[in-house]
Length: 204
Image 1 (cartoon, rainbow, N blue to C red):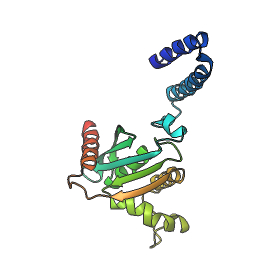
Image 2 (image 1 turned 90 degrees about the vertical axis):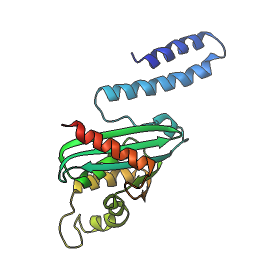
Image 3 (image 1 turned 90 degrees about the horizontal axis):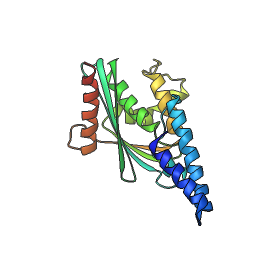
Image 4 (image 1 turned 45 degrees about the vertical axis):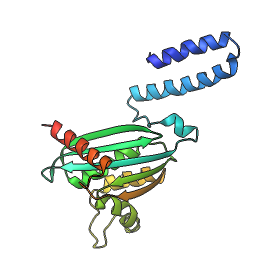
């Protein structure tokens, strides 16, 4: 059993015997049951558990900051991505890689992997140094969908599955995008670049 679950189970038994336990015990029992279900879902491979889920579920702390970056060298070639999620002073760093990719795919993947770990309904600001990602979401996406995922020249939209996945997760959250110039000394952007390159290089 998870150590935290064990401690809470012991506390629950004590509170049931000692006033003023019943109300607090009921709250702990509810929390325990939710925690147990999340652990079981994670163990069974039913997807990523959203970060900071309890805070978002209670209606508090639903504002998130996301920074993300992608790396590919050569392009196309081995790729890596990195992201940071921040909420109420807590930070989570994420990264991953692909043996054969492109820089744009890694940029999209970084944003997607971060967003899908944040609960639905949350307010999120995504900061990226990729014009491709920002302009794709804020300017091009609506027209692509209207034209059946075709660009203005009639050609199929590149990386369509990733754009569609991003569109789906954004639809369930309140997301805005901000752009920052890459390699300009922005602390979080620089850290995401490090995470992406570390993940890319770790493949070899």
